[in-house]
Length: 264
Image (cartoon, rainbow, N blue to C red):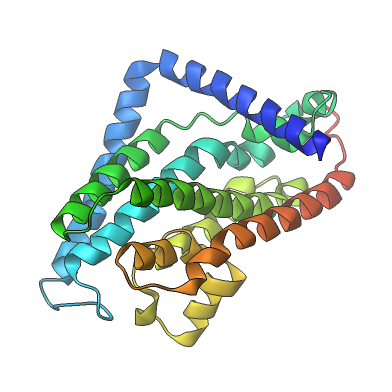
């Protein structure tokens, strides 16, 4: 347990350094934020167009779907900042031989890699997500209490860790393919299914995003709770995050044992 806590402390130390480094390039940071905000606004326009042809989606109106969308963006923003360095494992670290240097550090390689995350676009996701969430809470006449704020903060972080664990699990493919970007992206993008009410999907998709790749616990079940539609499923989120990370670390360590230097 002490070793786990030490690794967590090191991770936040690396992350703090990455944040400082990221903010040095302020213009790039601002451009990255704006580009992501524009991209997400296009998505919102698409949702608006859908609601021009229907009054609701599986019982959810436009404002409720936007609340779900905003909560998803908050979790995605946190996850993007904390875990996007996983995309670099194959092309940057293993293929170019940088992984050998990381292996020499007195800290688990996974901590060194994810601690190096400095994705500009994450701030765009986070900022827009917070704006949409607050605006929709006001529009839906949901009281913004201290309890609700703490719930949103807690379950957004839990949702981000769920996304991070899923990315970590699929990042192990880079030890054999050197293509972590393509593999992670292929599975990670399935989170977009959970940006909408899951009742609009067939049984297979529901099982996929609830059990196999539990993206529904990132924002869907928390949003259901915020809307007052109480569901016990919400409280499985922390447990799922812990289980996923146990699986992720076990698989990552197994893959690490198969690592062979590139010889560079």
